[in-house]
Each structure stands twice: as C-alpha cells, then as structure tokens.
Length: 171
Image (tube, rainbow, N blue to C red; front, side, top):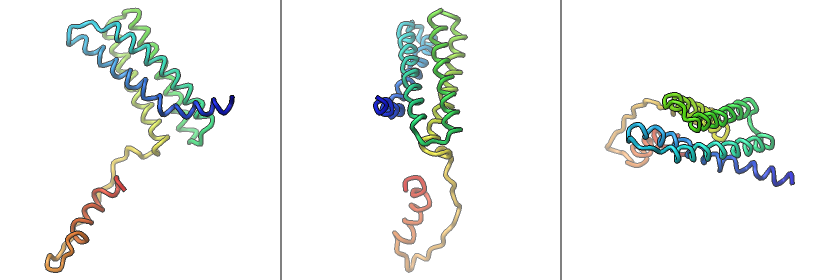
C-alpha cells in the first residue's frame, strides 16, 4: 500500500495543471460577465468547484511527493504553504460566489487568488527547474572584426552568432 501512495505523489506535476487552467478560465468567465452582459453564474460555480476539488487533490499529491522527494526543504515548504493558501482562497472565492456576494468582492478575491497562484507556481517551477529558471540570459556585447578575404563563412561569421545568441538557451 505504501508503494501505491508513493506512486500517487508522482502525479502531482501532471494534475496540478487542472486547477490552474480551470481557475484561470473561470476567472475569465466571471470577469467577462460584466462586459458581455451575460450570466455565466452556473459555469463559474462549476469551474470554481472543479478548481477547488482538483486543488485539494493536487495538494495531497504534492504533500506525498514532498515526503518522498529530494527537494530543497525551505523551497518545498514555502511552495506547500502557498499551495494550501491558494486552495483555501479558491474555496473562499467559491463560497463568496455561492452566497452571491458583491461582484467587486468576488473579483478582488479572484485577483488575489490569481496572484497567489502565480507565486505558488513560480515556487513550484523553482523546485523542478532550479531557482534561476526565469532569470534572463546574460548577453555579452562583443564585436568581432572579420577579414572577408580569408573568411570561412560558417566558422567565422555564422557559428559565433549561433554560439552567443542561441546556444545559451537551446544548448
């Protein structure tokens, strides 16, 4: 049984995209109601419920993965608590929507949850891709002077451009 539970933890990176996509799409539906003069309340409520349930499942899988993974404990704990807070906030947005609270209250909760979701996702990306995965590449400004009398076009002109502009990101 313990092996099956460990195995389930491996599904965290797979299922985590469900609540993210569903929540962001639901936010889009909710916000568009005001501009389209349409009522998407049943779809918004369903999207929030789906996001909340899949967030809970994703958090459980993430916790299992945390117990069995070799991750930076500080980063994984920050990610875990942010994910729990995001899940609770999605549940709070669902609650506000179900109780038919004011549009602005629900909208501000959606915005706050989206910001928290983004920060949580960034921390998760740092776990899987390294702390500097969104760091901009460092470019070096070097000017090569090439004599075109004896040039090997690829080696002297094209390859240095590919090497400085492409290889850093694309290996």
